[in-house]
Length: 177
Image 1 (cartoon, rainbow, N blue to C red):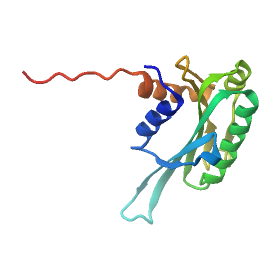
Image 2: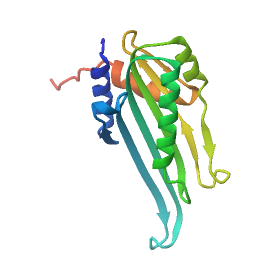
Image 3: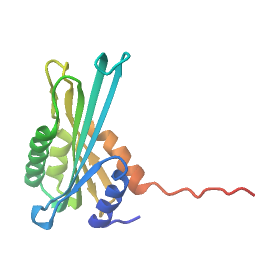
Image 4: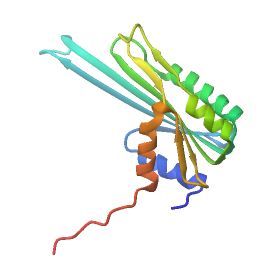
């Protein structure tokens, strides 16, 4: 299926809506279209909640950028914005397990220098020697003209989700006869 930037973003947001809190942005804040927030808290305790054995808080922040042609300069600007904003949103401390910050660039075309910068992008932070968890930076680019997805090494899971959402054909169910 051939997508436009708007339809691809709409399809991604539709799939994220079940699991993420979605914050949409106005035209003035372009190229940022939406921020999707995911929070999960798991814990085990004995008899009462005060006797907590362990807890693990997991967070993910996805930044959807709508750009006609992605250049290296735009990639670096948006990458830095997503990193800084994601770190402000993260709740680092006891019980924090991980935070994933994921900028997703939906563009018509992508410059080769921007794709190279994306693939070389490696941002990882450990908090208090991983006692307070870690942060990993996933990044992905969807070129709608070619239906091509490029990611950094940490973003391979994002590529898999995007392929399932955007390019997987719907199976027709068999009815009972």
